[in-house]
Length: 203
Image (cartoon, rainbow, N blue to C red; front, side, top):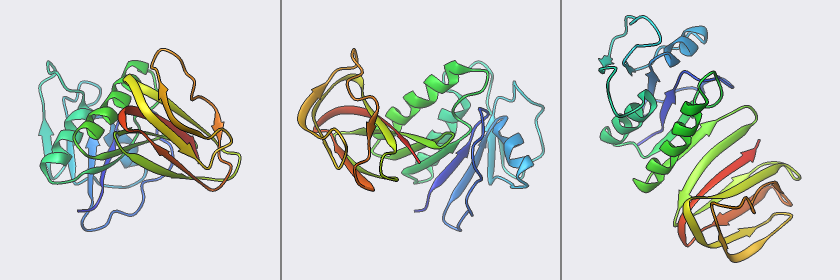
């Protein structure tokens, strides 16, 4: 499978990359407006359309306003249903609704819990969450990254290739010990034996 790209209604940073034949592009509600500005048509448009008029789209899925899931989460669940396990999400940070930013970060944890990989695209930075696994980040030397325990203690955390390497430490969600580390090399390896890590890194 390819990548499931989702465009939500928060601040939009960067352009959508070329969509390959095995990729899926979903517009979550007013995220459709971002795609209109880029002259890009989504394969699927979904949402409750409480923040915009319902547009015409070849594959539109309407949900009731009174629902448990955000439009972004609905798009993620739909992506999983269609067999995707890698998600790249635009328009999920910033904007007038900071509560949606928090919700979208929580959605990264949902993706990790479900065995997938999720990334939120911000302004010169990316957000991701890993669970009981590892990730290799790529960026320039001296670029910043931060690692936070998420949803509970993160045990067996190891960081290699950074200014402040650590081995087999425990991070708590009650203290931001992992904030503002830096790339010592172009690659940084981060792993956690048990628990969730929220990783934020500069591009």
